[in-house]
Image (cartoon, helix red, strand yellow):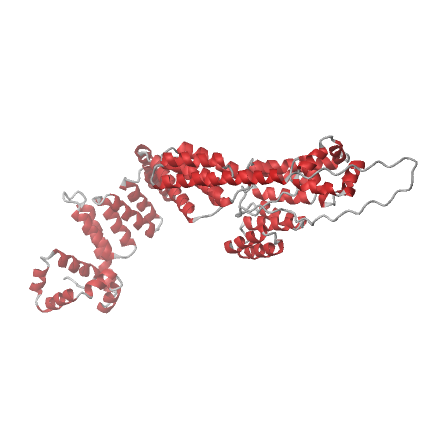
Length: 576
């Protein structure tokens, strides 16, 4: 879809609107939720003066709130289509809706142009009054586009002798240019598709056809007024000089930029910033000078200056309708500056704005990183051991009252308030057991052990859970771990009682099984299967069948003893 969009932008820039519409349509078929594609196709249709179709796409772009409710440019596209269709009141509403979302110079300009156009329609003499202005023909002569029209005697005569007829002659493309020149705006001004820095004309105009002289009037007693000579066309030298001056300014700005880039690579950021500023002052039409200046300030640690410069880049970019990729870059740099300043909330805001303009993996990764950072900061800020203890006590009261679901909620709050206290996990495991949620209970018991590896009660709790899950072998192992961590035997009675329950359950289970069934059940445990497939253990077990004393010798090795105990717990080795 992005490749088709880029091809469509190129076709739009070449004024090949049919091809652009076809390419944007194909892109929309692949990505119908991409509001930029709808907007671009609207611009192409407006280029063909198909304003109703352009409006339909603009409403999809601006009204597609479920995709991007904060995208103000869709309203600008809608307003432009309504303006072209001469539905001025609706166009004004569209622009005002967009301004509510983002008060940009482009939206303000579009709104003013619509209001000016509406004022002319409300005042039938508006155009005539403009032409009656003594300075009107001076303005038309000074404008290169309209000066050539004055060379047509018939056209000039119509303007001079009967300016009121101009109101009914707006279908003539030349009148559109005359109106724009008198109002000081470019009515034929275009809109460009998002993702392109081209500024093609928005309305494809036909070359003016020469006007035929008016039919001869009937003879009159009054002599006809002589037609004044057409005003001279402006000298081409001034225009060429202006182009030359601009070219020199841009050349000088590029030289400053090159010097700044070289200094930046040498990490001389102060010199780089100086030259990037000079580049912008010399040629304030290339936003890369500002974004580079922001980067230099960023590397110097002057984050406030970087933010200020990049915000200016965004504002200037809106006014000159710059490439959205450049605007996205400036917004992304603002987000990075706020991240460095330790303000993740604003960093997230500007990273999201940048992605709205143009999605890049770099900004997306930065957004995810700062979101994780903010979540971690919020979690740490929430820690309060006193509140944790209070929540745990509330959970204990609910547990005793039989409100196990309520107890889980309070224990969860206790864990959030102090995740380093293993008691919260252990107590929640007990509540989960009462709710017969054994997997969740086992997970909490393991987490309690992870937080405090010497927490004997957590091992006993784990054994109880595994007992409930009928995993007697693992339950006995948990008790053995509890015994090893209870050197003073404070929990010896509880451990002994739990072990007796497990042994009784195991004997009951084995009493209903054959030796082969016990082996099959035990082999489902990967650890047991690994022991049984170990060649050394196989040799030890074979030797034990003929020489029991040899097994006692092997039991002196703690590793072998642990494996033998595992097989005993699994019921593969039966003791008498």
